[in-house]
Amino acid sequence: MALWRDFNRTVGTGIVRPGLFSMLVLIDENPGIAQIEIAVQLAIDKATIVGLIRLLQKQGWIERRRSRADRRRQDLYLTTQGRHELATLRREMLEHEARFTNLFSRQELMQFFDFLRRIQI
Image (cartoon, rainbow, N blue to C red; front, side, top):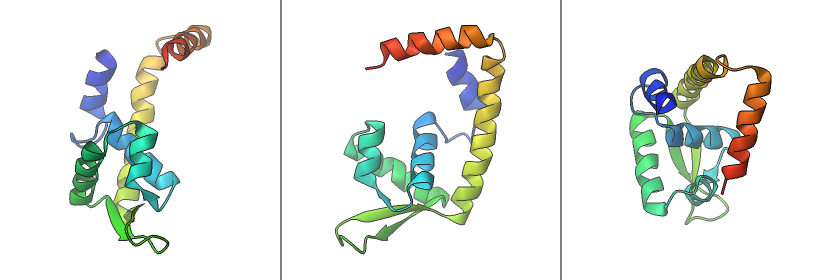
């Protein structure tokens, strides 16, 4: 809960949550990705992903373009504003993570990450 509260206080403009941050990173790393591919990668249902995409469009951070390969598909791209916002978010995310990782030794972090890997589903 402490991580979540700190994230909400320090990363983004108040609307950015880890899922939105992950979406922006996926779109940045995969220009032209389809919304269904994002839904699969992030394990988010189709209805939810549509709402998140609309929110990001409303912010001016992403744009949809009709696919040249499949006219039924909408490809997603970061806008110039979206790339700028993501750069800021990445910097804030690194600062957020450092506040917590700096509390532990390298050995403790390795053990902690091992524990987390064990509980992944």
